[in-house]
Amino acid sequence: MKLYFTPAFCSLAPHIVVRELDLPCTLERVSNRTKQTASGADYRAVNPLGYVPALELDGGGVLLEVAAILPYLGDQRPDAGLVPAHGTVARYQLHATLNFIATELHKPFSYLMNPATPDPMKAALRDRIGTCLRHLAPRLAGDGHVAGPTYTVADPYLFTVLGWAQFGQIDIASDGFGDLAAYRSRLAARPAVTAALAAESSRT
Image (tube, rainbow, N blue to C red; front, side, top):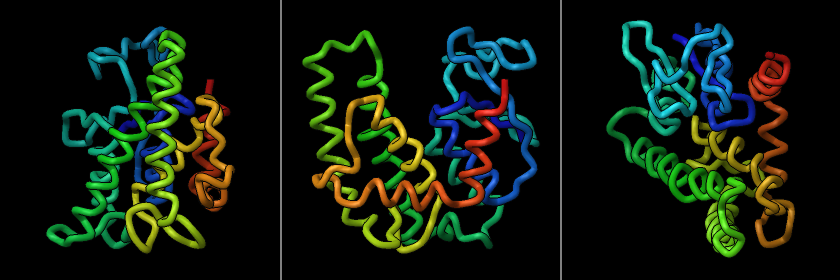
């Protein structure tokens, strides 16, 4: 497999999962500005829309969208338990959580961090994001995880999105958001997260 990524973008989530599961996967950095890969290719030949991540599959084809890539990766190592078994309620809860993160947090953050977004809209986006974070916060207290009692592929996704809060002028350490900062610190201490962050920051 090959994972196309841009540092600090949502591709960090599948990058973390690849390392959590020790999957054979090469990494190819993409410039968000030029849409060129580190090897000099036009990334739009992989994803015509130009955004990361994209996962090239060993058997051919390309998988797009974080919420689809994450469970696919988890299914490559089912014994690791990062994705619940097919047909279980827990599996559908995971998909619900991934969709919630994608639509209610990831996309609003994208608009919030866009310099072209008008200030009144940014204020509304902060309010909406805040409501969603307060909804999630009770799940994350103590040793909690976002999609159930154990660590799943949804946790790296939320970890990544919470990392954008500072750029959107949202203080996740404030009282209104429960223990989100502590949750993110817990995840940051995982070896796979540390390794993924270090690898992305060192690539040119």
